[in-house]
Length: 435
Image (cartoon, rainbow, N blue to C red; front, top):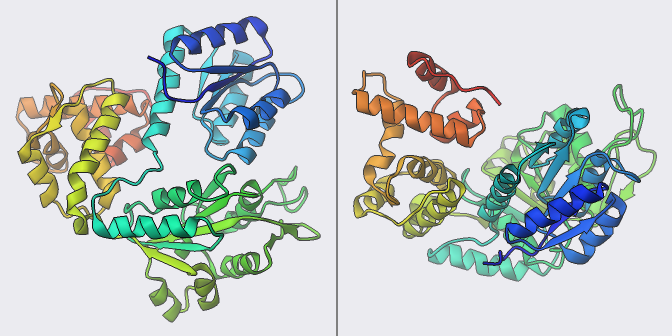
């Protein structure tokens, strides 16, 4: 059956490999466009709006890293798979830092290509811009967000961590006139203050030690589109003042730049902090708050929208079952009662992780209450029965396989510390290579 994805763009100057890739991707059920060089591909990208790009790293007219950066300017969240030879594997690792989803070393099998492509597109489909809800308050919020999307009004999204603020921001962007341009997300809490300015506004060559070439900042990357400033409440007062100027003047100053650069960008900001309290205690600028909160929206926590737990759980179960090549039939009534009884301090993000764990250990496509209990047992210290130890280790190993050996990601998914995973692996003499 033909896949509903629009197309995959294959970029490679090697004609035999390009043809082989086209045939392989077509056999997967996707439409395929091909280009023999990055310059041609960038033009075709605008014409065909591909769902994913597969590209070589060493090509004429433009090198792979430059090509990837140009893709990011046009589409900030485009999935990219890099094909690389041994000689350019270092560049492939560098490409991962630019947001590339994955890379394949030559030679690779059709099975390797199929598995990687489907995993990337499955993750992308899991990040749907559709907000799933049956809650009347959320429906009202979506209606308001849809109304404001047509304008360029700055939007401030408030709410606890994990309530879906980024998803709502993408919903607004996709419903706006800027939807064909990139949405660039910046996590203000994850970037140190001394780096955030250059990350947002870019810098000129020679602006500071190590600035060996000009770097375009996130605001310029989002030109014509939307910039999402996630956790704006974590921004330092110095940067708050500079951001206020950007919002007022619609121009940015690169670090080390001699003149301002005009930007046409819609700003959406999110925070889980009480900004009014932050203002009263002198940690957040009042003038910036009023500039950001032209259209404030507060998302309710999951405990106030319990009617959404079933529909969200089923959505996540279908998503992760597809990722893990497992079947999903239903939740038992006991499982749903258990899910509804939880407080979900981590909100939808915590629910999603719990469903992921349950799918990993569920059998016969039915998720029962017992499938949620193992995570609680893992955080306790008493000795376990052998069957529990076996189930626990099976879950750990499956999660490590799912995260390609990344113990930090696995620990986050399992809701335990990295030390807990290491200790349990050592206790049973198990080992899993770190990614």
